[in-house]
Amino acid sequence: MAVNTEPSGATRAPTVAVERSTGRGTRVAIGAQVAVTIVLALAAVLLVDWLSERPGLRVRADWTRDGANTLSPASLEVLERLPVDVKVDVFFQGRALERGLEMIGLEAQEHARKVLRLLQEASGGRIESEEHDLSDRRGNESPALARLAELELREVAPGGLVVVSSGKRSQVLQLRGDLCDLDPGYPGDQTTPPIPPRVAALRAEEAFVGALHKVAASDEPKVLFTIGHGELDPKSADVGGLAQLVLALEADGFRVASYDIQKQGPIPEECQLLVVLGPEQPFTETEAREVQNFLDTGGRLVAAPDFKTEHDGPLSLAGLLDGYGIRPRMHGLLARPFAQASGEALTGIPDCAQNVIVFGHGMAAQNPVTEPLRRAGRRVYLPFARALDRSTALAGGTVIQILTSEPEDWCDLGDPSDPSKHDWAPGAGELRGPFAVALQAVYPARRSPPAARGVPGGRAEGRILCVGSSAAFTNQLLPANRDFLLNAFNWASSREYRVSVGAKSPQARRIDVGQGNALQRIHLVAVFLLPGVMLALGLLTAWRRRR
Image (tube, rainbow, N blue to C red; front, side, top):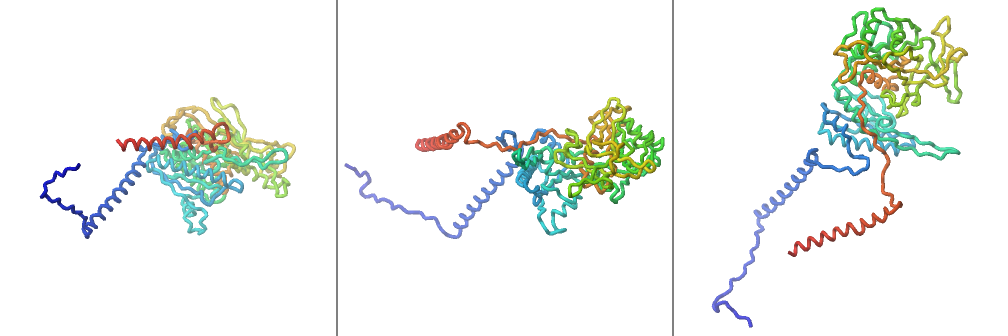
């Protein structure tokens, strides 16, 4: 039985529902709250994004087996010490590889882009990149073509290229050979099944870091081209001049000048590299002594004999090189049968002398000058070349053959009455190839080098690189021989900048559900483990709420 405890005369106060005003002030307040909420949410998003860009606050995990998404310690060290801002121009769009290689070319391009993004993130803002579209058909108004002109590049090879630049220094990285190694495969025949093309190795990180190191280097080796003996003219823009080579060297960080030893006196101590290309007259005794003194005190030399004269006496270039392990064969020029479209090989025409080309199999492997060219399947053009021989033993030094001609080449001897006249046909007394057409000599300095000529952190040594063809250096052939020539000058100056970064494997590692118990494990994880974990978390949450 319920008992009423309230007084009989008491009355219950009515319940009043308080309604919130819907006036203008209320609406403004609600709108302000919503706006503040949006602003705070946006600020939170921006804050999280900013924090994610801070390397010190970001934690990343690379679960790939070969660390495909992680830069090597050598790369991070170069980026940490990068002293300059760097611009990277990418010319991939609109430049696919040849027919049949398009897909693997796209794969290599995408890998290069990924590595570039990793480098940018780790650089702390020191690296800026821009991708250009070469398919833009607006002619001279195309931004891509305009940028190519600024970089002094006239064409882009199949697959595209990347230019790493800082100030006046720049490095050109081709897709094939620099950023990746490609195996073109084999079409197959009656006995051998076809082999599809593939990416043999991805080298984008190694190439990028080497280029960064190079454009950021503070050293500017002094290079002097000798003049006064009929050498090729460093200032000439004609097809037989060297003006384009000089521009390429300056873009690569060299300081270049011409030098007449007879008129200007001893070679300056700050000169690290002397260049003698195609001298038609011998040196004087004073000049020869000065060149020898330069080489004996750790000087570096890039040289090529002339193809018009046959001077080989003690004061000639051949005579000077003879004391350092290299002897150009000044009697005779190399020639090769000239192949016609019909397949017939012609001899007896001057084109045979211009047909001397070194292919990848004629380049030394594991050599900083030729290895990148060999990997890329590039060629070196050596018209009117002379064969090179190893001379007497170089005390304490080595002579390395880096370019070799083809077996069908021969050394065409001139007319006995006029050595400049050739019949360009192999004769009974003329030697057949293959011949050495480029040699390197490395030897310990015979006397202490001046301080300005020493290589920081390196031993006191002399280096000589001799190429059998002076015409290979000319403006006409620079577009084809540019990489070989720049590699040669950088090697002679001890600027190899070889960074130890392992090539990435292009092999995609996927779970093969058809092997072993892989499918059973996937079924266990997807059907039981993950749903079970979610169910357990749900039950735990429900239990905590009921407490």
